[in-house]
Length: 475
Length: 88
Image (cartoon, rainbow over all chains, first blue to last red; front, side):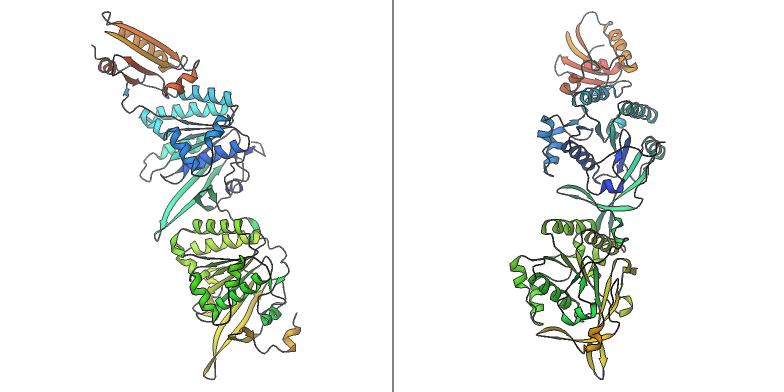
């Protein structure tokens, strides 16, 4: 087996990273999944992206008519009609006359004749065969199905076609040996899966097998967006902590002193505390200050609408309206339970792509547990922070905790690996009155004060109290 | 009766060969009718498959008399031929 097998990029967002380059060139990739998991869209996008990159390709489907495929493609902004006219793409809908009478054995001879003709005319090397099970079912005989699949595979190999075949999987399918046969034939096997957890639908993709190549072994969330398929792999970014950037002011002079200048650019800061300790006030102060300095801030709020947030922040004297009016603040309020984590991620990624923020605030990550499964919140945050760090965006998260011990936890999972700085806020009782206190628990890569500091919240905003010369010198 | 039909085959694949034999044997039993048969080898004329929407070989297309019809397979089941041609 060669050490370096040739790969063909799929052009599908995130998939080539998971496949470590693409699908095997001249090999067969099996795309399996239940109905509605997006198999046809994967196949269509593979052919379209190839065509757009000057690699002609053919999609042969046993399930749809050509017109339906062209219409489907146009929903994603792909002009398959023009690509077809340019000889870069062919969509073929193979259908059978439902009134036809069956009499004896038949075979794929016609399909192979069509493929031979088309691939030669177009000089194409990329081929998708969608839903061949519709044809195979007509044969109504397992050994005949295998014979025809072998014939097809031999033809693909002899003609050096980079092929993707979609296969439906049904839960109640008794044909395990059939599946094993297909898996054995293929050089690469990709599984798509759709599941519902607590009324939230999530889609997952997993590479089960890749002959002669390393590949990402985890399950990755993916979504079907209006730009095609979007897979969200975790890159190595979150694990390789590169040097943190210059400080960005937190907007609170005293806190900047304690942090040695402010939050570090490209880092992730967590502000944690119980209810009413001022987390959102810190986040809003940071936002107002940064937007006034011309930074673009993406504020993602899982708990409040923009109007509620604006009026709430007026009492500590934080007016976010100028930030909104200047266009430097993009405030997005979304219900965690409204969609699956992949939709949440892609919504955020799209805003990041279009708005190009330098800073992001997520308020509050504790609400993310309402996104569905127990791991959903962790998955979501890991990927979001990973993505932001990869783009050098400074991230500030708030976390509502019921006690100080679980500062770094949501749904029992430790987030500390992705967080560089932790600020804890609390209301402590001293002599019959509540005093606001803050402490910096952790600050990766910079010196910081370990002391507990009092702070006040007034119409003048946040003020850290009792900062004497000693703590100011702490650098 | 005058029958017009087209048999789509693929080179000399086993099923295609059997279909040709089965068809000529069957039709030989009915000398009182006339049969016009066009044999289309998709291996040589692949564009005919796309033009006519033929994705299975062998396929027998009955063009006349109306309403015509389609048979998939090597025609080893003569009942299908009898039914669709309404002879026998």
